[in-house]
Length: 422
Ligand code: AMP
Ligand code: MG
Image 1 (cartoon, rainbow, N blue to C red):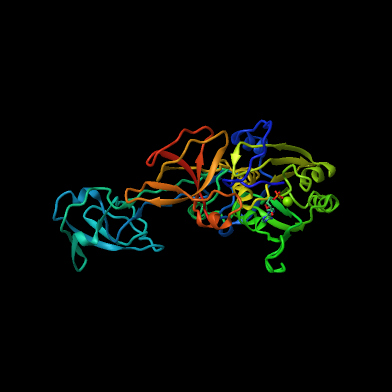
Image 2 (image 1 turned 45 degrees about the vertical axis):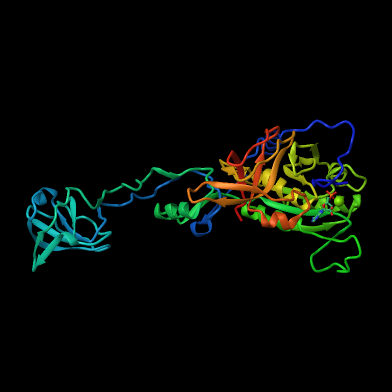
């Protein structure tokens, strides 16, 4: 049966199975994984999607030399001395350029975002001029070429501005839109099926509510679905399955039928009499690896595939299922979209308190961040690291990583964290 990671829970005695490192396990799960396919989506809907091809600019930006300020377009040589007197011969506004050219001794009234007329190369801001009818006089010096955005200084037609494998941010889709792309080629979303096993499990709101029995209200799939959707997946919850071999086999058969790219189970992954995920998966023809991973919180990780459908078996303990999903599921989903940086992404921080030496398992401790005035982030592990305690998981805002065999460390020492990004 699945054990808990809390202090005071007895560890089984006897010979220990060899442990696989977390890095090796991530490698096993993501080996040979590439994007599932490409689809075009409207640029407005591309936030968070992974770009499938390099994206060249379809135009040059700015398309011409443009004014960065409100003022007067002039020839730089004409304003080398202050004061300089110039004739105003016309106006250039955004979207309404001046048709003629600026000759010696001439100026054109210009506004931000307007094309700098032929002949002019400098904009004198209006605050540095005085105007009398169609004559302006400069009142302060302006260096030649000032206040002009040169044609193509942002990007030029044909040059890639965004690259394949990039998970697009809101800023990226601004750039894509400005490069004149109405649709973007992105990796299609992995289709994920979730299933949760356990005779004790009931859906929220459906239990007896007496508190006298052994019912547990399910939580895992909600966290797994949230992580998977944020990682770009399309998620289908196949619901609860009893600890019964034929019941599990029936759901697994459905999940492997081709409607999904990845099947994620929680629970039943250990070696107790009621842990039936591995036998059920094998009986349905899944080529399966079950490995004990050197991580905490966590249990054996199941990973396999059948006819191109991948299967990831996560532990049942809620905190373990969530942490293992952050470490294995999210990088796998990103790799299935061709993401060049599938993660898990860590960030540097400092310990806020002393921590003891670690054992063989990479520890992902639930922790809280505190940002100091100098910008440094100081991390305190939560008092309980029990792998069943959801109140602690919800109160945490990051995972503090303690590498295998890390020596005792003191407050102020550097450390790595995985910030929760939800
Ligand atoms: P298992 O891995 O099936 O042995 O489950 C380990 C522990 O996690 C047990 O205490 C289960 O009740 C609990 N558990 C299993 N699945 C879920 C779930 N989907 N939601 C919440 N708790 C679960
Ligand atoms: Mg169970």
